[in-house]
Length: 523
Image (cartoon, rainbow, N blue to C red; front, side, top):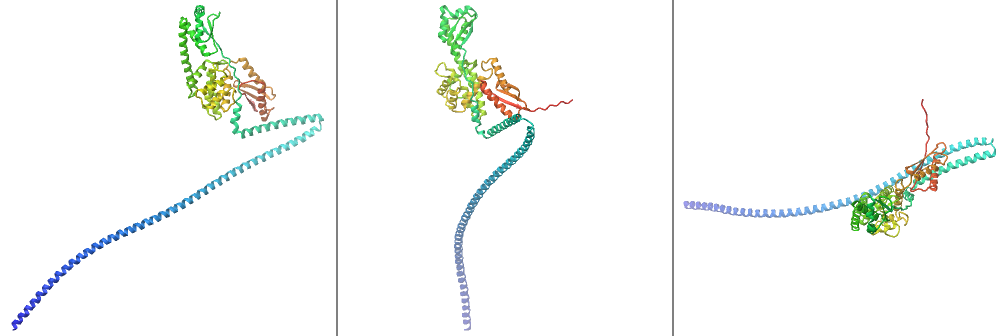
């Protein structure tokens, strides 16, 4: 029984042990599965937490960026407002500165006027002091003279007083005249151009006296007979071909060619020279030579015209105008070549215009073309100014100043621009200067002597010399007998007397010199 009990007890303990072990094993297995599930759940939770954290992080970043953008916009608005306020403040400061500058300028101008007034006041005070001193001196002189007059007769006193009054009046008149001239010169600078233009309008009228005869040398009377031909057929053929008059007289070795047209006269003379040099003179040969000379003359005219245009530097002229200028090479006036005269007038006009502040190129163009009507005045009715103006207008000259100068340089039409009187003056200067035209030496010397004689008529004048080819007279007065004011009076009186008693082109300048020379000799 006891062994059985022991065996049962042992089996019970074994079963309990086995059950315990099995329970432990089951518990371990369940625990491991629970751990695995927990781990899986923990992993899922971790991943969910990470996803949620990422989502939260993105949301937070978006919110932060949005807040940052909002703050940046607010900051930009504040900066823009501050900048606008700064610009407004800067504008106000600029206006204040401009206002201050204007006030400073006004203050400076007022100070300048005040300084000027102070200077004028001091000058007036000095003048008044000098006048007071002169007055006191005059009073003393009057007292002394009154004392002297007390011992004179009434007639003597009256004569002395009248002479004194006359001398004082003359002196004061000269002083006032000089003062007026100086003030007018200072205040009338704006009118100086107009005054100068009016002064240079005086010009010498032109008289055309062209030479209409040209001679051709013939070596022998036999050649003269060939030129005449049988019953005059050769000379008639030459006259018909050239349109000139050929005069053959008893003068040995000379045949005269006469025609009012200088071009035809030149063609006839050169044709006759070629025929005389060749020796073959008959109608067919005459026509051949004349035609050849005409072609050569046309080429020469164009060449001379182009050379003149280049020399005068006048551009844009129509070929017909250039040809007309070349024709003027064969035209003379008072022995002066008209083309050379035109070129000279062109440069004179430019110099005058430059001095007056006008357009020198327009003036040179007007001076160059002013006598172009002389190239065809025998072919058309009217004077050469009107002919030249219409000719230039016809061939493309559009400048009103140039056309008016061409048509009005002899006063035929009113001057509408300042260039017309400039051309008048330059035309007179070119035509009237010594050597330009035929003027006898006796007449020239007589004019200079008359100019000096007028200046020497005044008692204060010591010497008078005509210089600049009669364009200026230089007068030297006695410093003891004439004051500075008297010198101005003498110059004006001489100029007026020259205008009244003499005829002259252009203008004559009167220069009066007054000086005191002190001399001493060292021995």
